[in-house]
Image 1 (spheres, one colour):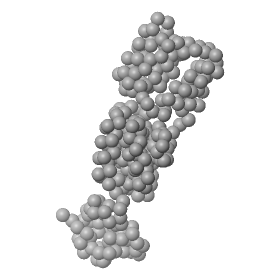
Image 2 (cartoon, rainbow, N blue to C red):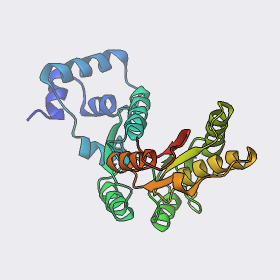
Image 3 (tube, helix red, strand yellow):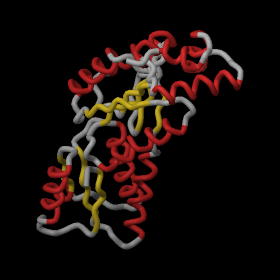
Image 4 (cartoon, rainbow, N blue to C red):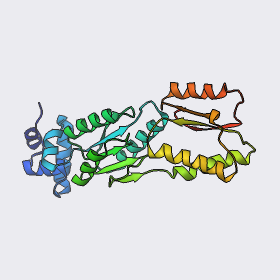
Length: 249
C-alpha cells in the first residue's frame, strides 16, 4: 500500500511539506508543490480520507435527506445540490437518504448521518422531528431546509412563495374561463402543501367561486396514488373544467 512516506521519498521533500500540500494547510513554494503533486500522480497515492477528516475536522460530506428519490422534483433538488457542491473549490460528496415522508425514517436517517461525521445537512423535512432538529441547529451543525419550513427550528430555509404561486396559477385558470376547478391534494402535513392549498382557495374566494367537495381528491404523495386520485376526479359525475395538482404527477 502506497503511503505518505513513499511520496516523501519520490518528491525528495520533507514529510511536513507533503502534508501541507495535501491538506492545503500552509503555503509552500511552487517548485515543492509541483514535486509533491508529480510524485502523488506517479505512484498513485491516495490520502486516507478518514484520518484527514479527523485532523482537519472536515469530512467533505453533506447529508441530503429528501422525501422520495423517485419524485422528479426531488431528483432535480438533489442535482442542484450536487452541481453547486461541485462548483466549490473543495471536494464535497453527498450522502443521500430517502425518508418516504416518514417521521421515523427521517429520524433513522438523521441518526445514521450523524454517526458518519458530516459537514452539514440539507433536508426536506417530513415533520415530527422538530425537537431533534432544533438541537442540531443549536449545536452549530450547518442545517438548511429545502422546499419546506418548520416552525420553531432556527435553520436557514430555501423555499418558493407557495401561496402566491398557487394563487397566480389558479387565477390564470380562471382568466381562461375555467370556473369549475378540481383540486388534487397530497396527504402531507408540510408547509408547502398547506401554503399551496391556501393560495388556491384564496384565488377562488377572490373570484367569487366555490370548490365543489366532489372535485377535491386527497391521496398519498406518490405516483400510483396520485394517478388513482386523478382518475377518480375525472370519473366524477360532472368533470372539472381544469385541475390544480398539488401532488406527485
